[in-house]
View: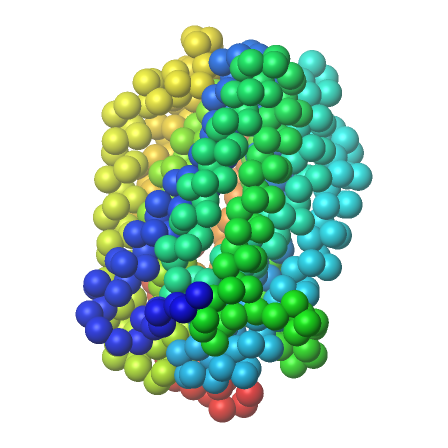
Length: 452
């Protein structure tokens, strides 16, 4: 299969970035439909207890998966740099190392996720009435954790070389497969919440397989060979150097969000169901943030690899502005239509009230979340992954947890918990802005390259 080159180092900046970002955006929509449809299906066909069970697992799932996704980001930085510099031998070693490393870590994540489920859910304070269903959902979900890891590795490879279309095609197929299986397992056959997780696992397995088959057959320098899959020491060290900071950042922030979820759980299952419904909607609201962050990382990595510094600066300005404006527009719409949106998942008045209050406290600050994530993506693309790690650890973990610990004891209300997000986003945005304006990050990238 012949493949066109997907370089972002030539042509119109806005056009090349948008053509890359749009399929990522659409792909993320379908990715978000996985868990969202699970929540909708169990909430409407099983009940609020089942919805609370699925919702209580969200932070825990993200915590377990996010570290390994950070490693995939590290691989993407290396691949994008070598692709932009046309160093195809180095790129091939990085690709095959990433796949080998992904297989190892995927097995570790699967085993640890299944084994640690009851302990962590109890630590989070999951109410006893929903605990059995939460354990079922979480354990079945993590039986497919290796598919999640490998899918992210494969998509990271394709995104790094500028191909955002093929992952979109495969996600569309697997999303409709997931919806069909959810309806059969839950709505028709009447199985429990574990069946919804099984449907997701099967669908994710297919999406990973389709990406793998494409990379085996593509006629391009990034084509993979099963015989070459191994961990090359130099490439592995580079992936760890760039990926571990992102992985630590993601997983520790997730731990902070688990603390937030534990506080939400203390308000009862109605709060869990309402805030869980918001978290599904929030996933859609964050899609412009995610797609522009990924586009910026790839754009910066490829163009710095090719030595196009001025193009990088113009591309960063365009990407950050587009992301922030789009995110805030979604935040305003979310505020206006909060009751109707939360009502899609639950008909219980108390759950809807909790969800609406939570959403309206947070959603008008989406532009700050967007700015922080975009600058973090730029720094990762420039090989400066430790910078966003320290900033986000300080603001989104230490300060967020400290605020929750103190504030909830003073004002024991759900909105007190909700304010943890706007406060931490504001602080990180201020620090990122100061660093970005003062630091000579482009030339620090050149110095890093010279040492390599």
